[in-house]
Image 1: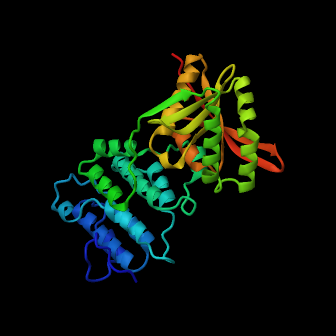
Image 2: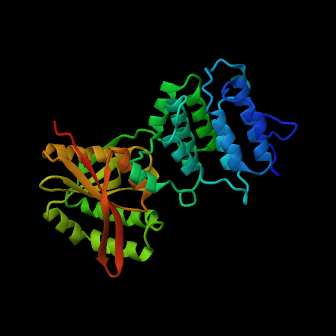
Image 3: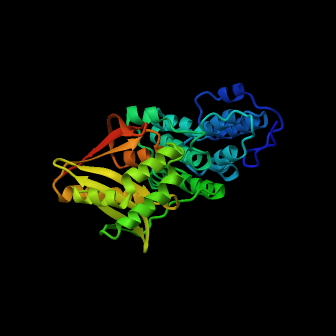
Length: 351
């Protein structure tokens, strides 16, 4: 049904599961190559989800890197990306993003740690290639089990540390070939906003919210909340009651803003927003480090926030920054609109 994948080995007949199973517990070069041949067979048969499972079985092999088979058939990260990119309409692919999340967090021996990070590497490819609204993460597992989705840098570091072969290089090749943007560490400055800067905060909010939130809340609610929270008199009232606003700058450009409220025991993070063009470049992490510094400088022991349950990108960033779920919060904000949020907390070491 499908033309052969050019990155998988050629086959002259269909491969069947019993051929792979006949190798038993062997996870050497023969198993590696046969798994990839079986993946080709499954792809050609029009079952890409099964083909990806066989590619993943090949990645279960901890080959030292000197085997001739790896010269002919490099570690198959490019294959995994290719299968996702060339999936045919109507052919079942499952949810690779969720599959690799589950695989990475439920891995067992042998070679558990290496295989865990290979699964996260494949998850990163799925995250970069597949639309999140169609292939969402498992937010229930993230919340209940405290799963932290890793960054590019975390995965790269672990592959370099654990791999007996060239995982990190082959993974980067797949990312580049797939056109997934690799994040770079930008120069970022965070400056407490003066009164005149509140105009910039307002303008950024009106530029960011209509681009980021339509998939999360309605356009009518976006318009209402912008009027409710970002008119200049409202921002000045916030400052008068103790809210500190800050601008996030990359170079000379203001690309986001923060709003925090120091309280008796903690800092409440009211706002942290970035223009979509800088998402995934480390600015959010820098902003959260700034918030932590503000809390510690005041001798406060925690940072708290609420985040919309459907804002998976923000939740991912907060989990990476070691925020934990506290409770569900449902708030009536007027005019028939309701916010359905998670309350989250990060407790700080003040020593």
